[in-house]
Length: 109
Image (cartoon, rainbow, N blue to C red):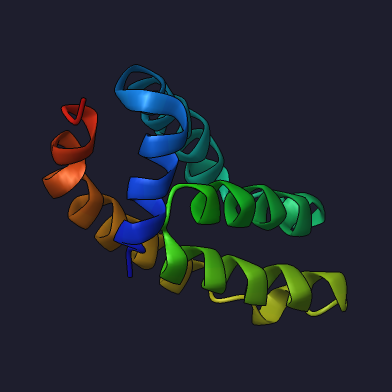
């Protein structure tokens, strides 16, 4: 669900301080989009594209994969087939796992 190698790679690339900032920004921006996901059908593809990129950048592999599937369906005019509740549940589960270990990466010098 979480690609911890990607998390470590990102932390290594930007350092602990930058990593903390990226995590905060990720949570703020992703939460804002997740809260309205599915309520703007004409923006579903765009929202899922944003979430996919953000998710993969921070190692949320499963969440990113579901967003990619939904993005493709939306792009094909099949937005009604996107399982928004599944995407939201995956985000919630991923966030919980991530937050349980994120301090390990914030405190690495």
